[in-house]
Image (cartoon, rainbow, N blue to C red):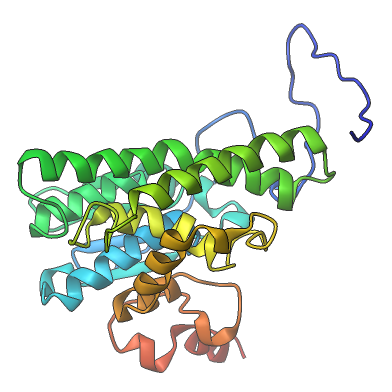
Length: 292
């Protein structure tokens, strides 16, 4: 057991210094805008403001899958929100999402613009709008929604819990790492049992449940999150690995992973997406050329 200095919580907690860690500069105990900045608006009815974190990837994969099905009305502009620079606290983004978290979507296809925030809400909105990737009714629909909400409730333990203490915290402490590692492995076991004998999360059909879960747990077992696949013995979850690899091979998923990505190898990045041709011409190259 590692030794830790005892910590006695104060009677009333006050924010008097950064807590340390990778994202300390943007963490704060209050909401609202820190500066005035309007959001850009492109030519398509769907305007996405995001970053290619797992929550952002959910939505760009959904949009690319809709376009692959032939839903031309799903064309979208995707604008990069740099959360490391606090762009999620700009007044325009706060108007789109008062919780200041990516992704946020403005749907301007109707008489009045509709804001949609929280990644699961965006998936559900798009599934309903285009009648795709979600059964219309009955037990099949309920089962898909069960797993969408499972992901929304479970992923904070993976990201804010395991990921934070294993990869981002300024110090490594045994207790929180053990606690959240145990929970992450329990969740992987839940998925592995659910995927036994199934092609996708709920059966033979690819749904928004897969799109919600894959960017977190699929990419985790593929070694793309927190450099933790070996630590978690990810290959032991054979059904999850099989499912993760199958989804990873989908062309729409490969495109969706690139959108609003500003990190990793250059060939994996597409900072902004305004047209399908951007995947060939590389939006980030245009931005770099403009800056020269």
